[in-house]
Length: 223
Ligand code: DX5
Ligand code: ZN
Image 1 (cartoon, rainbow, N blue to C red):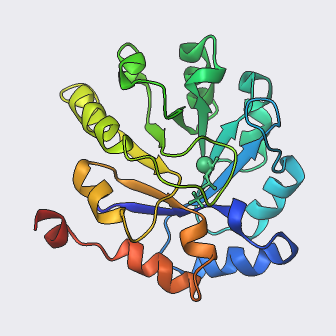
Image 2 (image 1 turned 90 degrees about the horizontal axis):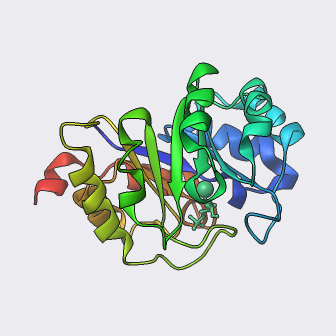
């Protein structure tokens, strides 16, 4: 597949959110990445349902909702109702991950599992067939604009091995510190969804920054 680009709304201008949403609508981006933080699972609070609903009102592309919250089961239906298309929960926040994944699918959403930088790929061994997306955190979750953790490449490669003959259509998303400097190497390693916050919104021309991340072609990947 051609890779997806998912700009992270966390780095958008919240006082002019509609402008930034329309920029993403116009751009070559594929999804909106929406970070929900509860101040407990991660040391930051972002926003909740009213903002998500407002984003949905204007967004013309799927909402990829990344839940950095404890006990996500309590809110899955509300997130779906507020407009989430993909719902990603953290492995570290789910006691009954299998149940949570199937609850997300029953709501008609794509089900994702995010792994913190220290969490090994091997924890997915017995759930890999059930999930649509794995989000590899390449920074410790909580904030935009952090430095990419290089060990992520190794994790992408182990995930690629795990999915062989078991879930080859799995979406492998990398989230945190992604930009022009590492996008090609990440795609070569096997990632197929790139989340980018700072690399898009701190750029002089965010729409062009998205186009630059999107234009990495299979030819470049083979080179
Ligand atoms: C971090 C969030 C990320 C963040 C990425 O906890 O999950 O989605 O917004 O931002 P950058 O691309 O700036 O690292
Ligand atoms: Zn995220």
